[in-house]
Image 1 (spheres, rainbow, N blue to C red):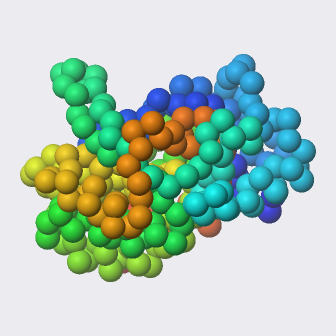
Image 2: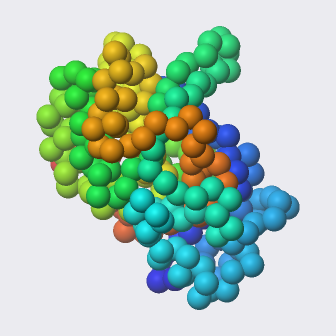
Length: 253
C-alpha cells in the first residue's frame, strides 16, 4: 500500500435508506495498512485477514470481472461470495418509523458507464435539486460516524458543471457518495460509496428505461458487492478533494 492509503474491510451489511441515505453496517473491521495497524471491531472472520500483503494488493488492483470493470473504490470478497456483475433489481425498504414500504431500484454498472449513467439519471429530478454529500472519511481514521452534508437549492446545470471537476472521488474514492433529490417530490438518485446506484420513486419507469438503455439487465435475484465482505479504499488526497467539493457546492469558492 502506498503512504496515506487506507483500506477498510466490511463484513456483510444491511443496505437501504431514503433521504440522506446511509448504508447501515452490521459489523466491520478497519485495517489501516499505511501504518501497519489493525483495529478489529468484530470477532467475525474477515476473509481479507488471511491474505498476504502481495495477495491483498493484487486483489485490490484487479478491476475486471466478467462483464463489469470496477473502479478503485471498492474490492469484493476474495472468496467471491458475490461475484460483481452488471445489472439491476427491484427492491423495497421499510421505513423504520412509519413501516411504509418504499420501492427502489438498485443497479451496478461498469466503470466506463458510471458518470454518464449518473448524469442521465438526474434529468427527471428537475431544474433545481437538493444534494446530500456522503462521507465516511472520518469513520475510517477516527471511528466517527458516517456524515451527510446537505446542500439545498442547486441548479441542476450548475451541479453537473461542478461534478465534472470531481470525477476522481466520484469514481475512485470508497468513502465518497452523493445523493441528488427533488426538492418537493420524494424522488432520489444515490450514487453511493460502493459506486452503486439506488433510485427511489422511479417516476413512470424513467430510471429503469435509462438503465436498460445502458445495457443493464433486470435480475431480481441479483446480489451486490455490499451483500458480502468487501474492502473500501480512500486516501488523504481524496478526503481533501471531498472537502473542496463541499466548499464549491456551498459557494465558498
